[in-house]
Image (cartoon, rainbow, N blue to C red; front, side, top):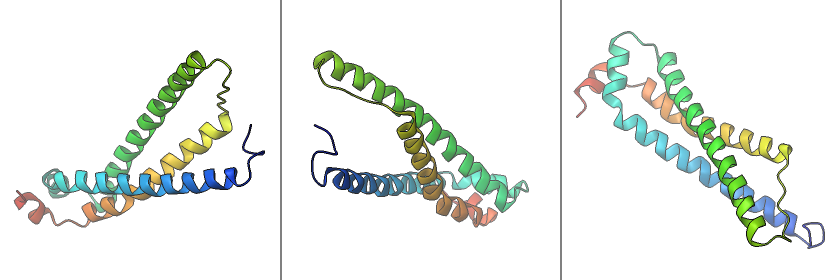
Length: 136
């Protein structure tokens, strides 16, 4: 049994991957937007100290990149642990990890995280320092 032997299975898998990517993008967007709104005062302090708009955008995108890389590492570790558990429970089942798929997944995760964080980063950069410092 493989995806080549079952009609339309690879197409179904591709659709599921795209749906997961869209949901992941929306989750990242929402979490970064919330994080930016919660740190309005911090952004105001940075801007009042002379931080440029580009600096604020870079700070938020660096944080997002760090979180994405940490998520990738945790995801790979959990995947290998799950594969070990599957092999232990069902020794005849084959679980394959290829470096090409791991690289593809990592690229998708990083690009999705960066795209999801762009709007919140630019929104934070547009904040007026006075309004941000007065924000409760």
